[in-house]
Amino acid sequence: MIDLRSDTVTQPTIEMREAMANAEVGDDVFGEDPTVKKLEEAAADLMGKEEALFVPTGTMGNQLAVLAHTERGDEVILDAEAHIICYEVGSPAMLAGVQLRPVPGLLGRNALDKLRQAYRQPDIHFPTSRLLCLENTFNRGGGTVMTPEEMKAINDLAKELNLAVHLDGARIFNAAIAARCDVKEFTRHCDSVMFSLSKGLCAPVGSVLAGTSEFIAKARKYRKALGGGMRQAGVLAAAGLVALNMVDRLAEDHANAMALAEGLAEIEGLQVELHQVQTNIVLVNITAVDMDAPTFVEEMQKRGVKAVTFGPRLVRFVTHKDVSRADIEQAVKVAKIAAGDV
Ligand SMILES: Cc1ncc(COP(=O)(O)O)c(C=O)c1O
Image (cartoon, rainbow, N blue to C red; front, side):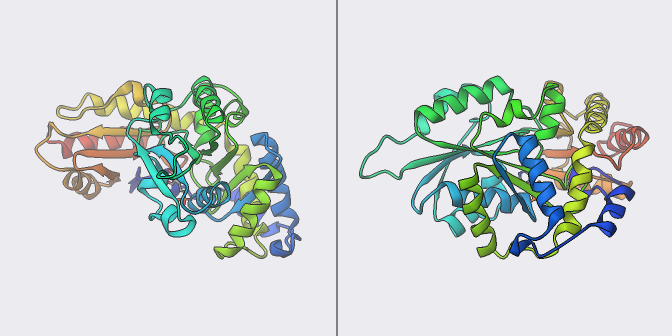
């Protein structure tokens, strides 16, 4: 089976499994796990932040950030298609008691105007605009990259409006590879950042949240409250440390995504916006084919290729370590048959 559903399906490497077996561990709730500490220090350093916190998932990292940056009743501004609003189970409302202000196209053109419009002037009737959440790369945008310049501009405006800025950087290393720059070029323009170890970087579990020491102390307490205080978590952090050395290979995933996109774009009835294929995600519009996305995905799966539906007529493919160029060529052949272009 060629699994292009997500980069989360990657298997841990042999090196990771060895590092996990040999990890030096302690009780991390007591602050005694040396491997977790090593990962958190390395991550803080890479992100250019004072401190970092190892968390089980990206979702928890994002939610800790929402909790730590806000008070109940505050408003959080974000793109209407952001992961935090689409796929995190409504937890900003459930856990932090905040209201989300979804802005269509915030992560696209005219971001500054859209942010200004979404911001609430102080008024007794209004919730307090407190936090802006960005996402880079932008998953539902098709893995598109917000440039460091765009991040700087929106962060500068957020600061003028007294908003904290959290970056959902689940795939921030993909952004850095695509933009050929250091990841700090992005993270210097946000107050906090979450990045995933368990996606393209192939760790079996884990994400990291980074920010100021004060922010991380708050987030650490919320992590405990949510049941995320893990004990000998160094076994997992050991794989995370190996993952941090796997950043450069993301370039292969990007090249494979472009090869896939170009192959799919040639198929009658499939539409791919090639300029939006900037990292490891390919979105395919199947409007011109006489079937809906679930049927198309099913037709592909029957022939050995997995993808996910991303809308009634939209399908998402994600490249990663465990798919080769030959797999990509096979996936294109299968898509051609599924689309009836034979
Ligand atoms: C942009 C983005 N943010 C956050 C997450 C959440 O990560 P996790 O699945 O580890 O909770 C994902 C997962 O796919 C994601 O794509």
